[in-house]
Image (tube, rainbow, N blue to C red; front, side, top):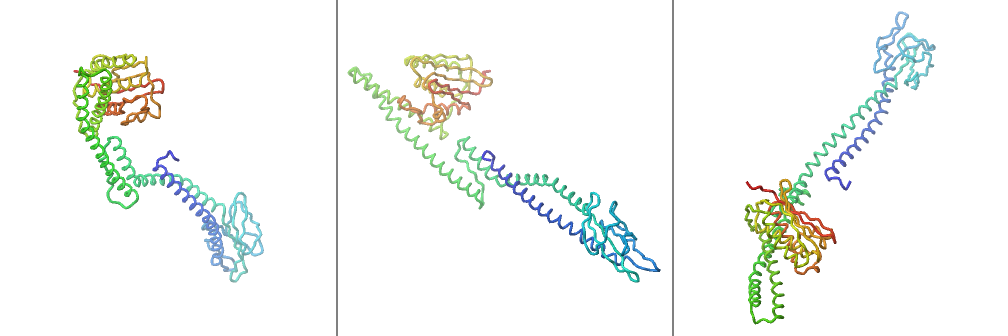
Length: 453
C-alpha cells in the first residue's frame, strides 16, 4: 500500500467501502425479501381459498362453480372436494400432486411432491341449501423461490458492474479532489527543474485544508526567495569587495619577488604568500562568476569554436602540470569537431576537471582524456586512477565548498565542480560521474553537436 499513489488509495478505499455497503444492504434485502416472499405466498393462498365462498352455489339440485376457480390466479391451484370424500368435484391440482392427501381444515402445511415443495391449505366452505364442501388451495414454494433466486442471480451479475461504476466515479471524484495537490506538486517540480523561486501555486480563495496548505506554501516560497536573493547579493558584494585588496596583495608579492635585495628565505616565504593569495583570488573569481550566474547576470559569448583544437591545447598545458606531480596524461581527441559554445568557459571547464584529476591523483598515476562524437553529441571525458570518491560523497560533489576529504588537499576551494556543473548546464549539456574508492573517477560531459557547414 505504501507504493500506491494517494489517488489509487482513495479509489480503492471508496470502492471497497461502497462495495461492502452494497453487499450488506443486498444481504439484508434478500434476507428480508426471502421471508417476505414466503409470507406473501401464504397470504395469497389464504385469500384465494377464502374467496371461493362466493364462487360456489347450489341450484336446481346441483353444485354450480364459477370459472374463476379454474384460473391459476397468482400461481394458486384451487380444487373442491366433498366433505367426507377425497373425490375431486371441481378445479385442478398441480401435475404429480397426490389426489388422496388427507384433509386438515384450516391448517397450512408444507407438502413435497417430486422435486417440488408446496403450501397446502384446506378450508371447509358451507354452501347454502347444501352441506359443506372442502376447498383445497395449493401454491408452489419452489416456484416462488426460483423467482427469488433469479432475482438474486441478476443482482449478483449486476454487482460487479455496480462496483466498477463506483470505482470509476471514485476515480473522477478523487481526481477532482486531488487536482490542487497535483498543481502543488507540478509547481514544486517546475521550481526544482527551472531553479525559479518566483513561481507560486496561486490556487485562489478557498477554505479547506488544501487551499490553506497552498497559501502557506506560497508564503514560504516568498520568504525563501527573499532569503536567497539576499544571500546571492551578499555573496556577490563580498566577492566583489575582496577582489581589489587581493589584487593589490598579488601585485605587491610580484614586486617583492622581482626585487634583487630579497634573500632566499624571504623569497620562499613571499612565494608561499603569493600562491595562497593567487588561490584565494581564483576562488573569489569563480565565486563571483557563480553569483552572477545565479542572478542571471552572466552572459555567455556563444560562438562556433574548434573544440578539438581547444581540447588539444588544454591537454598540452596540463600534461606539464601533471608531469610535475609524477602523473602521465594521455589524450585521445577526434579532430575537426566544432561546437557552439563560450570558448572561455570551455577552457575553464577543461581546466577545472583536469586540475581536479591532478589534485586527487596518485604519484605514478594516469589521466586519460577523450573527445569524440557519439550520434548527435560531442562527448568529452576525464578519467583518472586516483583516490576516487565514496558513494556517500558522490551526490554532494557538485555543492559549493563541499570537499569529501579537505585534509587531502588544502589548496582546493570546493568550487571547481560547482563551476563545471553550471558551465555544462548553461550549454544545455549533460554531466555524469562514475567513481570508486581506490580506483579513480571518470567525469563525462555531452554537448549537442553543431557540424560546420
